[in-house]
Length: 270
Length: 325
Image (cartoon, rainbow over all chains, first blue to last red; front, side, top):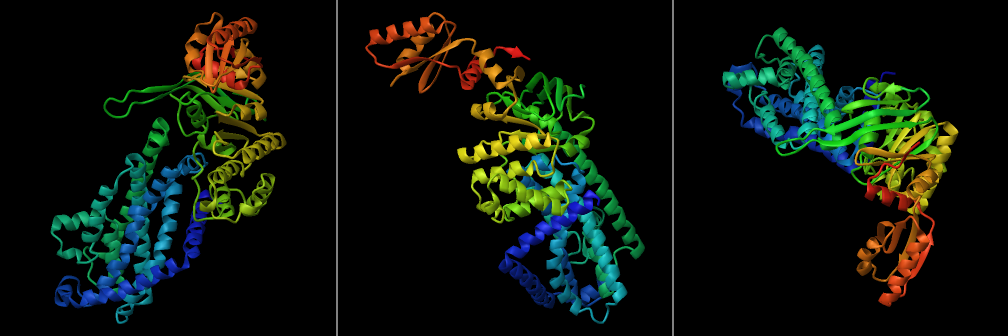
């Protein structure tokens, strides 16, 4: 069995054990997720449905808001999961042990992020289901499948970003302000709460090119709610695949640079 | 490279580059030549900052040497990193917190053995049970890691280093936070394990008793230089060709400078009891007794067999290169 698959399912096992062991917390998180979906319905009441119709061709503000906020579950995958893991491994000294084991650091980071992404899915699902309820007239099985494939691709690209951020943590230790910048970008430049089409052109292009959530979300809404996309559908798929590959390359280089630096200075000096 | 050695270094140097303004480079290893035979327990001794951890980290592929060569199991640590990683086990210094606090001991060991080392799950369970039984830890296997004492956590980390049956194991101060009983049990287990499985163990320690008890050979490193390699017995005798006079005084402080000035005394150490290292113990003993008599102080004065601690103390303070096997 390849070490990547083994690392992944054992990371899932480890995460699940911790999650299931603290049941009250686990159930509360699930309930909070569903309640957030319901809460977003109230926000949707204040939304200008006509503006939404003009911009993306739907008046379904409720699903628009809920799918946006559901996507926020993945934000942590990119920003915090691997970074937190490495911060904790650095603090406890576990990283020394990890780095003496015979597998690619890049694979180790990405599989751990993937396990965290799977965990996030648990909290994405209740929220997403609330949003899906209001798309009964537009959703098809095929559309749902395509929307979810776009989501998986988008999360895959976010995981690669996560590997870059994890390398940043190991290299610079205190990077919360850098994460804050990206946190802002994820919330306001990806179309999470307002359609990308309403952003000033320069910000819209930053959101489209830099943040792989933008087209994942845009395609999901398109397939499930029948919205108009920012670019043509094939162009969005192409850019999404490009983002996945681009960030995978970047993550590989970042982890390699980190490894080189670690061997020169020692992980304890990083 | 000589294939008869499990671990070997040749003129190994490590310079940590200075980071940032005003930080100068530090030369942690200044050309270390080391050879450890397969199946032996080798202890690396030396004061803090001597270069022990740097040497172990290079051998465990965590650091890259600046110059020279290092091989583990015949593999070059710089060129065949993954081959080295496949055959080594490692437990770092101060790593007793380096596991998942919310998992049990068994879950932690299973995760590390299977996920990170590829040990089949059933085999991992069998080894966990066997190891735990050998060190009297079976009752703690289902406890959360967070509920263990510092020493118990350290024990888990040492066991983790062995679960995949490595050929060479690096343990950086493995018994540092263990209580004497557990430390004794772990030492016994390590020696037996090394003998049974022909495993080479290279450990660093400050604990002279530990070095004497379990190491076939020891190396003394100081200031980035390996100053001695030999058996614990050779270490003790090579350094302490001198004789040792021990003086037990309620307040030794006023006498220390006088002791140092006595003819024939090369070094004085004190940790409650004062030890005078000299070539002629009888002559010094005589002078000490006379000095104390004149001062009207009653004290216990005797000639004692030099210990490994004495050897350590003399080497650290003199910085001399004593013996190479």
